[in-house]
Image (cartoon, rainbow, N blue to C red; front, top):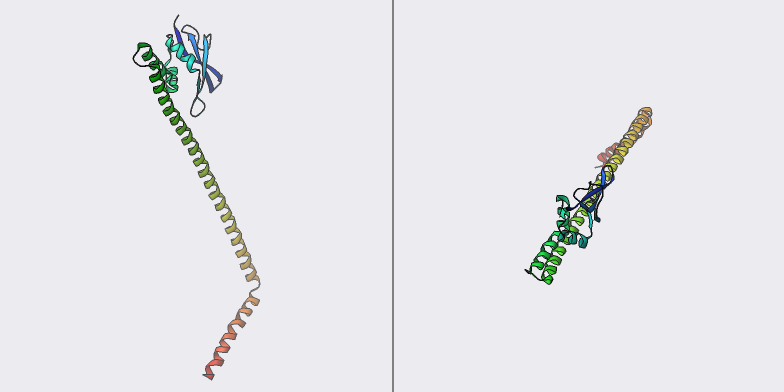
Length: 192
């Protein structure tokens, strides 16, 4: 019996979630399987991969063949590297301690890359939100300024209309103010 590690689809339309299963090659995609070893959700960013590493490694060492997609996920999680190191231990090329040290070094580096990507995505989202808020604030301020300018224009038109309706009192008041300085200037000239 040939065994594959593959994905079985579930979830609703356009929101697929996959189970990582160990199944006979002849079984249908979403049909009968031997063991469920994890889940995969491509709808999140970064994609959520939850796999039981020990069970997947056991199946790989027993000869189960992963599909291309599952192989990429297992490589991402480090299970393929662990299989490679374990084969080296079984052949006597390296010791178990060396294999564990290499795997833990790789795992620490991989976790830092994943954390950096998550931080970068979060900061990009925060920057986009801040830019949108700044644009909205500028737009609101422009709207308020336009409304204020329109109100000032209406006040100026009302003042001009009042001035047109009552021209005499304004002109008389202006004439008396101008006449007084001229008279004082004429009064000072003969004395000098």
